[in-house]
Length: 472
Image (cartoon, rainbow, N blue to C red):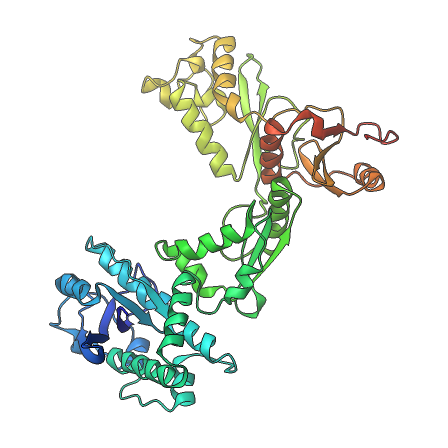
């Protein structure tokens, strides 16, 4: 059996990147086998650390560690090599191990030391061996098993509790059973302690949407995948190295999923659910209320002038020379300014800069304008430069005479003018959908449909321009 390192740390907070370690303790249990006899030895490593940052009063109240106590103590960098040797080739055991391991891994990474031990969480071990207990926090374990703690919320005091708990488990279940549990937990080590492994195994590896909930069933994160279980597991695996994933894995308390007929259905459902529930950790696919696009109209001299249109002032799919859409006026303006600079366009002619008629724009004075503002560049030349620069952002005209149904499995997704009308299982559903008015234009749905139509075979698309004709 590998030597076991029972580890506990105290920190200035819970953020791997911002906060730092103030104390670390390691209680090592080694088994020496000589002459067919097993001899256990226990060694201890303990030190306060100068975190080189502020210790909040609340942390001092909890741990008793004051700024004065860490003054003059070594920094993590100063003991990193010795600490790494102390933990090397040992099974890393901690309570809510993701926290302790995450902090240590981040600290080692800052000093260019790779730290990837085998990790076992005693929360998971307690759940596995004592399923009748409702709670598995350290205070409950102390009370349930009559353990003695010399200094709760100090590193050595808490690390010693873990050794005591281990010995209780050995006495009750035997070392063979415990080693089986360790092997099982090492396979599951990427899962947070509060997520049941049986829940993960019940997730199908099929297309669909998964939902992470925080406490009180608060929507935390909604995602989609062609392989649900694999994707959910990847979040917890990435949590060992990525701060955002680590933060999310600590908060997720429950997982649900919805299977879909395929990838397209998953994309559409993900977009819909995110906009309905606004999960706290979803940045993309939020409902956008400031969407806008550029329209081009000629002025009296024939130069195309850009005018910003709100989402209520343009009809995607049926209007030509509409460019965007953009999530905000700022994003739209920034893009046009960058294109003007890169293509020697006149910001005054475009409407981005106010000047008197016949007066040069600021860009012309810097030799960054072709001179349309002072009549040195013909309208046809300036207009061609402008439309060529914006071509990539032109909103596509809807390429069908009406609504279409895209088959996926045994259902059909119905679209019209880049809007998603719904999903149909039969002809009656199709009729009902195409008779409904199209929903408000959604930028994310537009992108999903446009990308999917590029790769879907024509045989899976039915044009529903005439609702009286069955597309099949």
